[in-house]
Length: 168
Image (cartoon, rainbow, N blue to C red):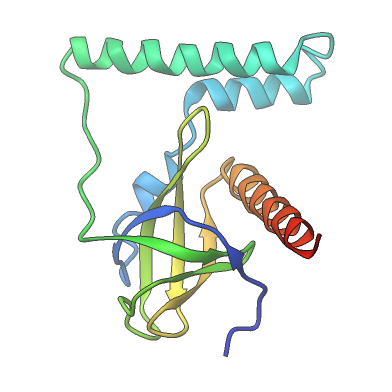
C-alpha cells in the first residue's frame, strides 16, 4: 500500500535501474552555471528590482544559445538514452504510479521526467519501486524540486476544478 497521496496526472518518464548510482554525475550537474550564478546573485540581494518573468526568459534564452554554441563547437554530449519509457497515470509530491506493471519492487531507478510545460523541463530523479506500478521519489535534482512541486500542484488544481464542474 502507498503511504502518500496521488492524483491523476500524466508525465513521460524515461528510467533505468541504477543501484550503483552510475548516473550520479549527471544528476549532480543538472543545474547549469547560469542557474548557480543567478541563485548567488539573489542571495547577495542583486536583482531585487528585476522582473522575475523577464529574468526567467533571459535565462532560458541564454541556455538555448549556450546549447547551440556547444553543438557548433562539437562539444554537445547528449545524455545516454535510458532503457524504459512509460507514462504515469498518477503523480504526487512524493511519488507516482504507472498504468502498467513495469517496475521491480525494491529496486532503485534513475529517471528523466519530461514535464509538459511552456518552457520544457527535464527533471532528474531517483526513485524506488514500492509496487510493480508505484514508485516513491528518493531524490529530485537540485533546483528542479520547485518545478516538480509546481506541476503537481497545478495538476491537483485541475482535478479539483474537474470535480467541482462534474458536481454542477
